[in-house]
Length: 441
Image (cartoon, rainbow, N blue to C red):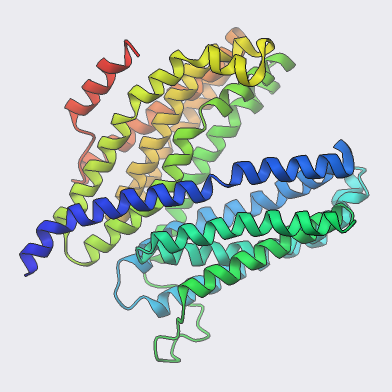
């Protein structure tokens, strides 16, 4: 019986992983149409200035929410996913999410007045104060979705994510249509986050585990912070790489047109990143469950297949690079033709970051979170040195090539890390086939 389950574990886990990735990707892809719909509604209702206030406040809140997610999500998935007695651990993890949300919301709420004065925008005060209230809701619902992923309940996680976006849109539309100001839109955002939390928490279910020993405990499970801190460093490094090129281009003399082309080309290469973001937490959960159940070979096969999948995506990126001119012209118009030349290095960067992200999930599941963090350490020094040399000489193209090169360095180090820890690497044959197919593509 045991051997049979062991033989079938890789195929079962793999099928569930693919299906879950599709569901979660579809769920998170709602962010794009919802964002566009909200932007259109607010811009038409309050003008460019009103929407600008909302977008500025939302960007500050979103940054705080991202930091909380980057710090706690992977540790929650790893620790909850690898143990059978998960309820008390999940309960403590949720409290940390809630406390982190409160700790981030409080200073933003208090700083709303000074920030509005410093930026000479009085409307920012109330809008930011309202939006700051959503951070505890979002942080806690993020913890709930992480628990669902850790327990392999990918469908429930996808539904909870979809409800979050739909509730946000519905709340804002209803409140704005009733005649409220931009502060009403911010309150609608908070209401949508609260509804998302209620649904996600309902899916998680009871966490008392038939005992009161951990009811009010804030003691993190063993190994929690040993996973949380390195994975946060990893996520922060890749996040800074994504933003650093634009800052370097502006600081080192790039023209306004260069910046516009650079930003357009960055958006062109967003798809591989979205796929990696949707896939890597599910891979982490599936591998953690397999390792916790003693199915080491199943975990290795999942890791190998995941890395093979990234290599197999290279020809699709090549097709996108070959079609960049036509796509950019359709989306942005002829004025952005130079952005098409930047698509290839950005697609290289996107595939490399996806490979690094997947490798990080593999290493974290195997108990090597510190190795995963070290994969990202060379990325920023290489990028900074490259920007200083290339941007003054080659402008936007120099910044794009440096971004792609730095990301490729990170992927190379990550590949070495997975091989050194015995977790495999992308099969050479798949990589070679991908490169050969990419040339004519």
